[in-house]
Length: 357
Image (tube, rainbow, N blue to C red; front, top):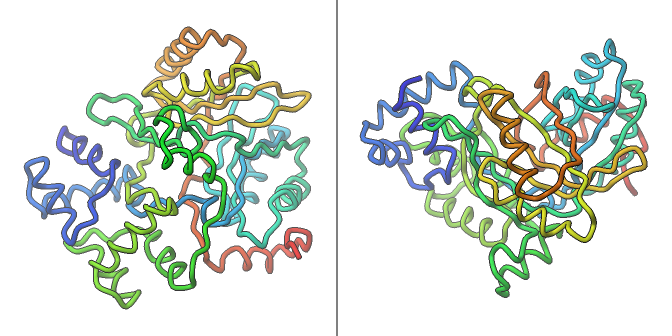
């Protein structure tokens, strides 16, 4: 990768242009031709630096239920268990991590009619997990991965739907904070649009023509629908996903913190304010797990993650924490919504308990 590749990757991680010829616009912004943009992105995809470019939707606002799941396995069972768990279409991130008793961590999403906890319990039983913990989000301080490919450091977009104070006490912010976890009704036509927009954009001069044609509408109508989705906070933006290790960010740490209840919001906002923190959540505790706040950080080296870890501790005054480094990525993708894969999984696995009445 040269500096132009890096500048281009920085651009496409931000809000990706929703215009007829987005690659032309990107080229104009960094001083290269549309054809060169397409050639460079094609090569970056071939080498698996670039995973995909697509719309990012909000899982909960679409009525899907989601959680982080931690499971513990004997070392010789870990790989096989991860392979089985990956078969569920709602598993979007699945990592082996060192640093705690729980050595497999994955995110799980299920459609409204499926039972989230029963699905996780079925997975634990089938894979012979020693223990499992379901850790749904209690409070959402920040999400927004962005790798600064030029400066070679992790950074983030400060997207925090459950955070009123950071944006001020406006009516709009208050409504967003109160409803971040509430589903929004979507029509069948809108589900069709979501299915089309969540797919990877083609590397062609007019990439939006294909999904628009599939939906029987013009690109202008597609952009208008996307804007409506954003206004309703169903969709966040179009954006690229990079392979963090192939992008040079070889260290990935989930740092979990024991934060006193009375300082939960204060500390969460302080953690979210750190540029290198890409995710910040409050999650439930358990007798064997006193850690309330989860922060994700990425760096080019483990030493870089440790530096961020120490900065957060010094800023917040919180010292009790664990640093859980990823040792293997088993799966990383975006959740796909309103697709038949979920029911096909049930038909294959036949875990009757995972369907709600």
